[in-house]
Image 1 (cartoon, rainbow over the protein chains, first blue to last red):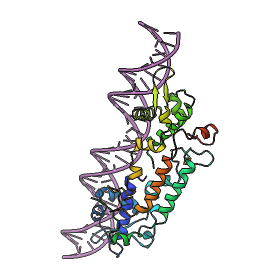
Image 2 (image 1 turned 90 degrees about the horizontal axis):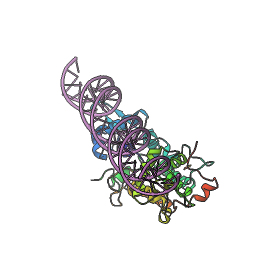
Image 3 (image 1 turned 120 degrees about the horizontal axis):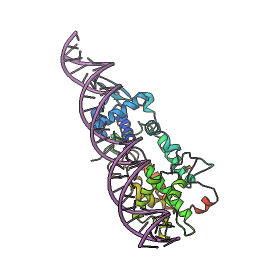
Image 4 (image 1 turned 90 degrees about the vertical axis):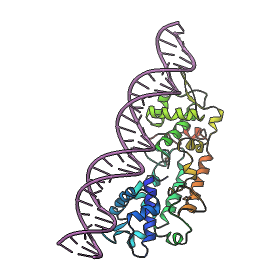
Length: 144
Length: 144
DNA sequence: TTAATAAAAGATATTTTTATCTTTTATTTT
DNA sequence: AAAATAAAAGATAAAAATATCTTTTATTAA
Ligand code: FES
Ligand code: FES
């Protein structure tokens, strides 16, 4: 569904939203531990998300990653698109060069419905939407 | 969504079902052209599907690939599972080691619905289901 | 203003996926 | 039986994804 990179990215932004909700910043080590990802790898991913304006960061002591008011409101669809591109929302299920109504693949009509539902679902939740349930221990960003 | 290998595989089995519906066999070159895939690569994939009993083949003149009565009835879910495994049907959207109700990721409940719909959709169509529409030129297995 | 901290940037390495090429085996036709 | 055909098998290669390591830059605190 999503690339491994994208899964890490989603977990990371949700984690940052959660941990920096009080205005503080979260370091890369804490993030890596919190979402169970390779430290240097998630660093690269966040660097990329930073360039795209999906996360903010500060260097030096007390530095780390955080989200400004705009970033908090980004949807998971934004994150997915930033990392994996829009192929998942627009591409052909069977890999035809072009998904289209005019010359559709055999799966087109049935697949389209599901693809749209995925897009609606991801577009309807912001990265900060999960803060409460993470606090309450109702959902998790890592497993043992 | 699916690996490139899996997309080729699905297109190939649908193509074979279509072309061998009359009891004949289809050669690897015709398949590769018909679904616009690298010839040697789809050969490897079909070799694999052959071992798993999802396609049949015969060597020598008039040889090629075909589907027996059982194979024709296999669903696209069977093909996907043979190539990509069941991760798409059972795995966590965010890559947690285990998808579960007890310690779910933030996306679990919403994602589960979509994952199930995908499984139902793929499980409800057999590889031969598309023969008529392919004949009628209503759907396609390649684009220019 | 020096030392410590933490991310950014750059370089390299490993693994997995995708693709290609060659040789062998099975089958059929002549 | 020999020649031709076509897939199976094996070996190699290229590309992409994932992961790690090192150096640099920015920021803060002592
Ligand atoms: S053409 Fe394949 S999904 Fe639209
Ligand atoms: S735990 Fe993530 S989808 Fe079920």
